[in-house]
Amino acid sequence: MRDDTPQRGTGYRRRDALRLAGLAGLSAAGLAAAGCGTSPPPAPKPTPPAGSAAWWATQRKHGHVNFANWPLYIDPSHQTLNAFTAATGITVTYAEPIQEDQSWYNEIAPILHKGQAIGYDIMVVTDGFQFSELVSAGDLIPLDQKLMTNFYRYARPRFKNRSFDPGNTYSMPWAGGATGIAWNPNFIHKEITSINELWNPAYKGRVGMMTDILDTGNFGMIKVGVDPETSGPVGWRKAARALAQQRDAGIPRGFYQQDYIDALTKGDTWISMAWSGDIFFQNLSSGTKLRFVIPREGGNIWTDNMMIPKGAANPVDAMMLMDWYYKPPIAALLAEAINYIPPVPNARPIIAADAAKAHGSQRTLLTKVATSDLVFLRPDEYSRLKNYADVSGKRQEQYQAIFNPLVSG
Image (tube, rainbow, N blue to C red; front, side, top):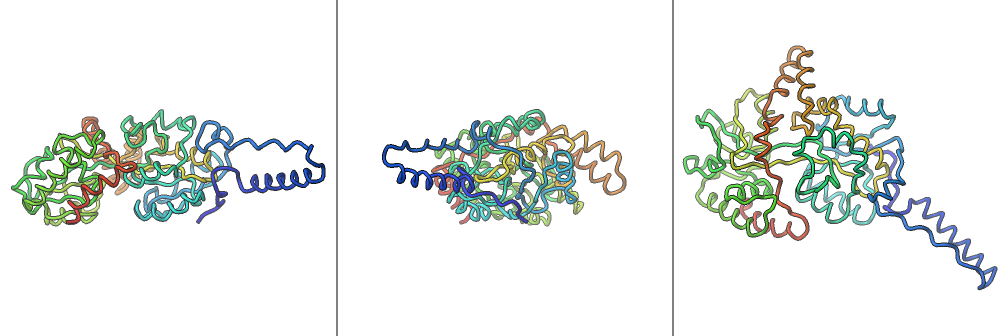
């Protein structure tokens, strides 16, 4: 599904390199014919680094963009993309090759490290280990901030200037979610408000924790009063001790991946770390009434992020499409389809208006999306959410060495 495969490299385009090689050959022949007195040709101007202001000044709209995303993570009819093409004339080849961050990174990293293009102008990657690796390795093109008009006008402040990407240098969120605590009211009949409930001996063997060490590590830090966003190895080890005490006391039933939602629904677990979008969808699709809260001590915020890989053939077109999704009507269409937290708060009244015009099951769905605190978190909940700890560079190995043994043992 790839069109307009980009030229190799981030410096000269292939045709430029061939042209320069031809000039060099002609110059050598001229020197041989004319003798030593002939002046050498002037050296070509160096290409500015990709993503620099000088580099962006040389880039132009090409009329096409290749977009790599996760499956089922866009409106099914692609109305948002079709509207973009109608408004700008830019066509989009949309593909869904990303199954999870690690496998996608393993596929593209060897290509990018060789200075080659992966065939996509936009890709969506979650903040975390792979995001940090891409930044550290120089595999991303810094964004042109002048082409982020909608983003800076409409994005919720909580989605701007994140600790893992200061100044939104490399990314713009596609959608997000929150990690908090969910519980099954069939088994726990009180309101849950504190992260300490995940350590409560009363729920021994009925607590669900996550295998995702970014989420679980953050929760350990929040439990012991360490701010993940400013944390380091000392705080990580303190959090790991608290998690080890919880595990050794037999309080967690297990460390779960996506199957945590089934365990919570069936009652294998009564209370669990949980992702907001999962709880919304489970209650919507199966009629369960699972409860969800951002603990008063704090929870995690995560985002799947649009970014431009090095070697992208159509960076201006990519920037225009990324910024397009921050127009409130477009953000509303996307949120109506995927039900994750939109980074554009002004999408909410548009979804409510669409619900009022809809009928039957569609009206019910849109009403639930517009009114759900799992899709549009309250301001006080946003204030309690923490970004993941900084795991860039050598910190990644330190973090993994501390937390991996807790969830794999």
